[in-house]
Length: 105
Image (cartoon, rainbow, N blue to C red; front, top):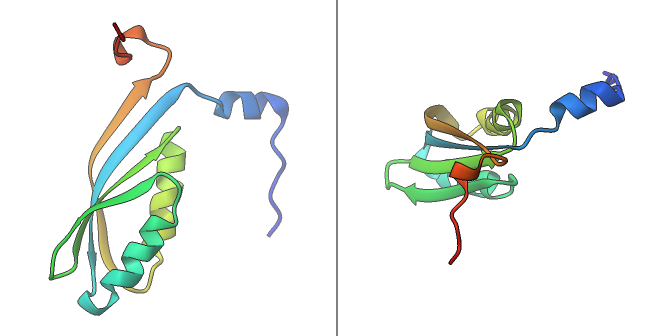
């Protein structure tokens, strides 16, 4: 499968000043929890925050676009040890807006 090269205008459109963070709950087969956790940890911007004995994993994924978050979620969805991956919350901040920045005194 060949990938179409993006034109410079398409590349410019993809460049945003957005910051996305999504929180998710994953359920893994108990015997696969360590493997699923390892898969999460190798994804740039992904972080595990809690794991239960029964395979529930709370994680966040950070990125610069909705599409980027979705691609990272898709990487996890195909893991053989993952039963379910559900988004809980998704926040988008415009990094150019001053109200998103804390002032340092």
